[in-house]
Image 1 (cartoon, rainbow, N blue to C red):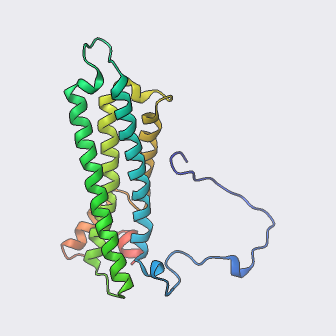
Image 2: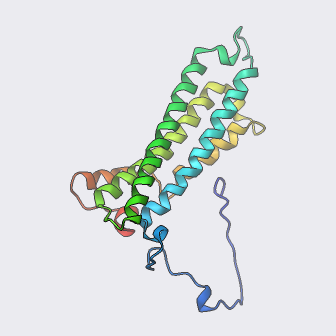
Image 3: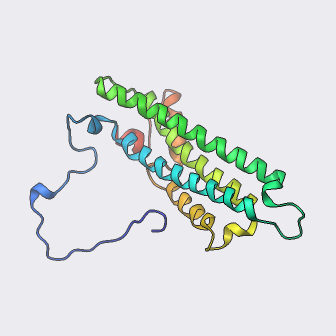
Length: 202
């Protein structure tokens, strides 16, 4: 699958000893701090890291393009256009804001885990909402600079083409899909969650 490095693997006639088999996600208990981190949160925040890296690469690629591109039928370079100014400004702040919130929440959860404090359903809902929204924000940021880049962003030879494709794959991942924002909202309004990330992996 593009953007994730996922591949199908088939193995025939192989014996796997019991001590090499992992339990299903969330089915084991461990005293290690990382394993006490809520399962849903642990599975979602690392996907955000991928999208943040992709968005950063996209913004950097746009800045490099803007420095040298002279759009057709224009007397101004790309970096002199007001549309480019707005695109990079909005994209930059969206990515930085998403990253800052995620880092704040990860640090808070980590301290709670180390202190063996209970993490409430509301706290987990906000964490999930932040993760899903951050990935959505990374896609929006890449879209902003891709639109401002013009047709250059559509050529396979330009990094923005692949970055745009790959960041959308992250947004579609089960752990950070947009539907979890709504489910998190249910929790904030006092209703029980229905989705796997908040209900099934608590």
